[in-house]
Image (tube, rainbow, N blue to C red; front, side):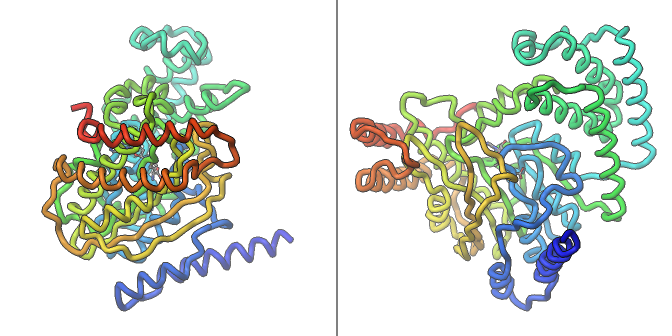
Length: 463
Ligand SMILES: C[S@@+](CC[C@H](N)C(=O)[O-])C[C@H]1O[C@@H](n2cnc3c(N)ncnc32)[C@H](O)[C@@H]1O
């Protein structure tokens, strides 16, 4: 039985690899190859090599970028992900020997991405191993009083961590800080520390902090050795801590974008990663101000989040168009969301944006998500489907992402269409819940108010 399973698995993977490696004479044939792929990737390994370094909510499976990178780029091309998160697209570009640029406003995302897409020499790793042994002595003997504790905002930290835990984490952080000059191993240590903090947050039964941290570093170093054998010459990787609405990337510099943007009203990454950032000394307040899709504001009228989100995504798509070469391919993966019992089909909104931006729609792929492999949360429920829209840039648009008048016009049109749809079919995302007529009527009033407030809500916040 075991053997049969193993054989089927190999065949499916081999078939997939064959589709990727085939020679396709034209762009049209490459688009055709997308239809040969079973996008559910059910039997596939989705956590391999450095993809395992750090968990990240709502990341996409590596097979999505891997497919497009193999089909649509050549050796010297550059791949961009403007919302790179934990760097899935960047790691796949690295493993497939393509240069890449990852951008994210979450400083933790940038750190994780950097560490996952670079090699470290044996010499540097031995320095880290030495430091680990030293740290083990400190944490075992408990004689060293951590200084770092004094620098932490105590009120926030003590919510989740007791005094002993704080001591141990501080000792690790201080020990790592002594490696600051050795950027690669320092960063790797920080990612292992952040991942340990994540384990503490997720765990119900407590975590042996140093043992957890130690194991993570040893595993990560083992993985980097494996990657060294696979990637002989490191491709160029640039990771930018920046805003997807105003990319610090030259125009016409890439042939492929593969990205999964934030969802409206789904997660506040700044909140999810607040403790990690706090421990690593990162500025999460700044990220909060620039985060797209967050929902810690407009509490009284959630539909204002929608117009704000649409404006932010329109600006980001203008930027995606700018950085792509003509004929370049833009791939956006996104699922549906729900706002006050109304269904938000973001992929349809993005397809509509495409029509203003000289993006030719090539196809929309629907995929079922194996929910055991994708982030779920009690706030958003399961993200159980995903649409992958494939666009081709036909030519440059003479529009800037700072053009508020253009953004206002397009968002107003979309919000009015949404208003009409809700009037005709209220409660499109009830999912079996019962809601009063009054509540649905209230939604209509709130949408009307959100439309009135568009000129102020689409303005860029946070400076
Ligand atoms: C769905 S996640 C991307 C996950 C990624 N595909 C992966 O596999 O890890 C969306 C990302 O958008 C980022 N983000 C939110 N607002 C942003 C902004 N204004 N500029 C750049 N990135 C932003 C979030 O930090 C988050 O990492």
